[in-house]
Image 1: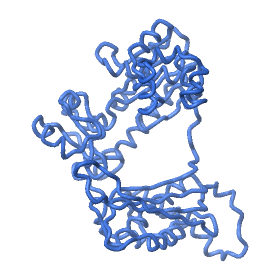
Image 2 (image 1 turned 90 degrees about the vertical axis):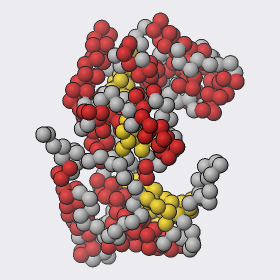
Image 3 (image 1 turned 180 degrees about the horizontal axis):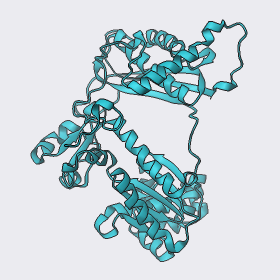
Image 4 (image 1 turned 90 degrees about the horizontal axis):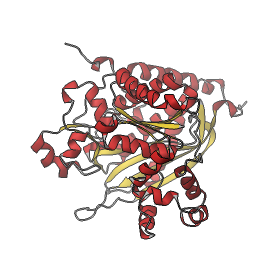
Length: 426
């Protein structure tokens, strides 16, 4: 049996942990630059606040009903996610937890007796909520896809299910699939859902009963076959090991305001390069290729939203490295090549690829010993920044004022990751 533990309105739940007065109150969290709504509490949903809708459009409704609004606080959300995942690892064992996203994790429960599954699911839910304050829903079923179906039903009617649904019999599975539209199946995108409706296949139960050969021909080959098998209770999507070494590292951000000054673009690229290099060193790796991109501001989206064009380039490094200054230099050179004067830009990013373990790089007898000390310097900078936070030590090319930083005008305090913002009990 497999389970999925899904945090309910995760970002909103994180805000409520340190604001108990917001219990049963409508809450929303905004995306970067306070642009769109990316998390809603159940109370906000009932008021008609739309998911992924622009904040400025929802603002009249938000102000009318006094909806509590927050900017994204990723430091807080990341730390709270870690606490939830650590709790799950303690309850079922590290080897039985697959972190799927910041607010979801699959659990392998094959070692749990069938009679104890429902009790364990309730225990998991209650323990996570007691230890972290984050509300969760738990779905348990023979496969990953079916556990997602169970979890969706658990969240759909929280009072009746108490946020726990167990699909452990054929009858329960068929009933659940009959209540689930193909649009709501994990792994079915909007294009395939449209096609399925065209073929008069509207529910997950109807899809389950389709032939394997049909799925192979019409549902993307192997992926379609796996989906049908999973709906039938046959394990076709296995648990995956935790991703320790990333094959690609990217740091991208929207600007607080569109910029057209090359110096601001360079500051942003230097800052993002520093952050990407820090992530690289954290996994004891080096990169052979660095790429950058900048995104132009769209001319107008009064009628229909349209993304501006993205301009990108990359360069192969003579030697693989994780030293920040050795990455910033080529990154800034690339900015000069692709930057266009008198043009507004709204976003930039840095991508590191061709990543290999640091100890797999052959040494160079022709490199002076003094240059080899750069790694020690990087370790010292990382340690200081980790302990003091907010990039206490940074390269001059990253700038000092950083007027281009994204807006977070409604951000709450970073209660769990900043000494000067610790939660105060009165």
